[in-house]
Length: 309
Image 1 (cartoon, rainbow, N blue to C red):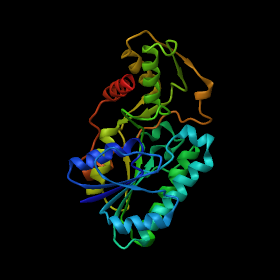
Image 2 (tube, rainbow, N blue to C red; image 1 turned 30 degrees about the vertical axis):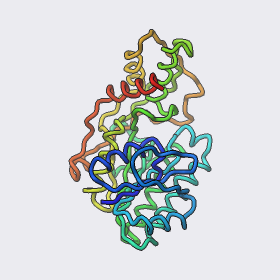
Image 3 (cartoon, one colour; image 1 turned 45 degrees about the vertical axis):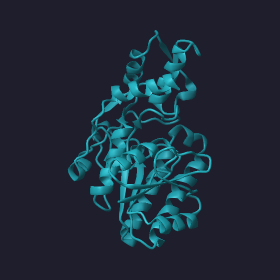
Image 4 (cartoon, rainbow, N blue to C red; image 1 turned 180 degrees about the vertical axis):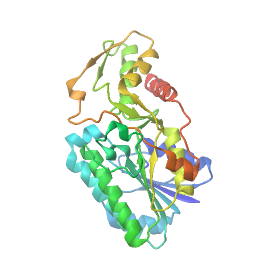
């Protein structure tokens, strides 16, 4: 089986390369000129804003499965750079879909979206099913919802083999500090090294989110590539939300020093959703996947990464 990962230079890319290698795939991976991929794969430089380059690569590699990971994936950054977010996540995805339509070989596309697409929902709607109406509340979520809707159109109109994923929060060692678990763990590591006072800056601690370890996430992606049903949308997550306060307290409990926290207004989002928790019965039914790694283990691994770094 031959796989092509688009956008493998990001956080999830390396984990997915290793997951696929472990299962005997021939792995090809794209990255930007500014990025480096150290894992074992065939590397290709690609900018998804250049459709003709994508078509050329598809016809050259001729993969069986394509994983489209390339994205501007930060909600916080999407508020600061909405145009960049829309260009990468919408126009870039259209370029990938057009390349899929025009390619010489039929290929399966795993189009990665986000649980953020559901947006503001009634708390009694949790756990959220894939059939829930989308009500995105930030620029990133809108861009991902749009890309997913366009993906559905390409599946129906052109009979393309496309699976749409709505991945909920995932974390692990190596994630950028703009994401909450990595952010808290980096601050703790800095405090332990005496690089900052024993006080963690936080945003909204009452929000509840579903967190899954990145190892579990890439296993889900592999299984969807192998067993997922074309045209379906799949939630990928643990299926149980926890508060950001729980994440913070767990991280602090692992610290070697006494730490307090203070709310930083700069970390509060212009729009935040009280709770997001998915129903993950569809992916379990079709692939047998469920999250196996505890959130405590993910936090511990992330803290150890920052301590070493």
